[in-house]
Image 1 (cartoon, rainbow, N blue to C red):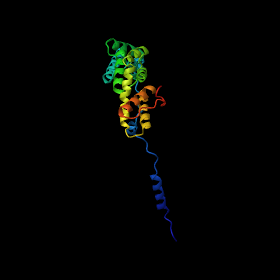
Image 2 (cartoon, one colour):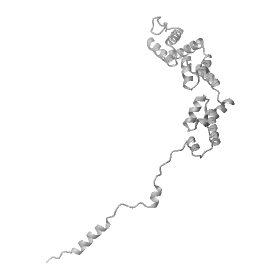
Image 3 (cartoon, rainbow, N blue to C red):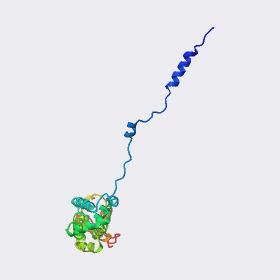
Image 4 (cartoon, one colour):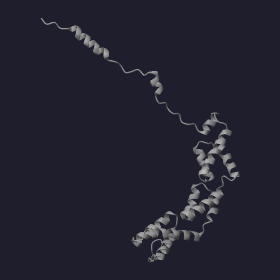
Length: 223
């Protein structure tokens, strides 16, 4: 008669059940290593409201920030106001600091507008219309912008347009005449020149090169 060894089977089953374990319990060190949520940086205005920063300290920080900005490039008062506002400085700090910078000549919209018109026209050949748009975008008031734009008269515009037309016409030698005209006029238009001025400049540039002048009835030639 065969005897069944139930004891060893029971012990094997017991061992298998004994090896089953639940999920590991996190230790204290593992909890400490978990990433922490980074708190957002408080603005200057929030720190002032909370009493963590004095007005004097905030003013000094604003001065240092302005000096760094102006060291990199000149700016208008409006641009500087926007820069400080984005950094969280309240108007109560920004206004007095900019007033002081204006008193000592570090912020001067008149000089800034004059410089911008002079350099953008000479270096980029921008028209009066394009210059006026850039001054407006930089927050220069209308009266200051108008005075600055007086540096560029109609003759200056024509000379700048002709200079640009010569460059663009020279780049398209060998192409069909209409293609050359279209590209050069488009380039001058992007600089802010009216169609009449642009076509006139391109016509003169082509004539200098020996090309036939634009037809008088060419679209935009007399605009």
